[in-house]
Length: 228
Image (cartoon, rainbow, N blue to C red):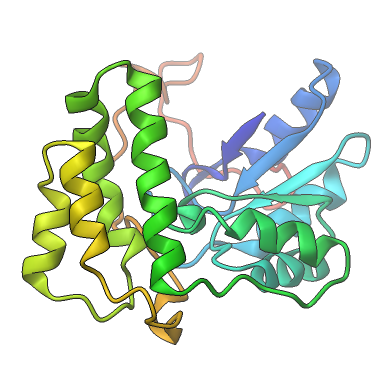
């Protein structure tokens, strides 16, 4: 089961949800260290993951939030005691992150640093697999467009070239444009770090009456020890 801390800082439910998960026979729980209203804004609260790990000892607790590299995963596990990590935005345009994670978990310091040539080959393969998955070349290529910026983050690639890659109408056109890149360009330091959405929400949409209690009032902030 994957969850967030709660709706907002006044309605934190993750500790109670973790205990209920154990009672209901869930195999493992994963906590994204943000509330729903935070969305992807700010920094993930790794201390909340540590508190959940302390409260839920019967099943594995996985941490999620701000894992941008394998070393981030090691830091999270060391700081929180969690049993593993869940990766979200960190792998956007960077599927080799999972290779890095496997190496890190085995105690290896080896990390993937692909040059632009390897990145281009992965981009082409990604697009091919999307076409295969959707069963439609136009649909697959259209879906791939959102990945172009993530793959090229940090590399020196002109705006016109980026635009051409993001508007390619077929696999053949995409391959032709990828072939025009400087394949010898090394992995840039600027490619590291956050990627994807980083904005909070103005509000969280909930079913009508979701926060009403049995007396018809509104749920108030719960005590620090309740976990609710």
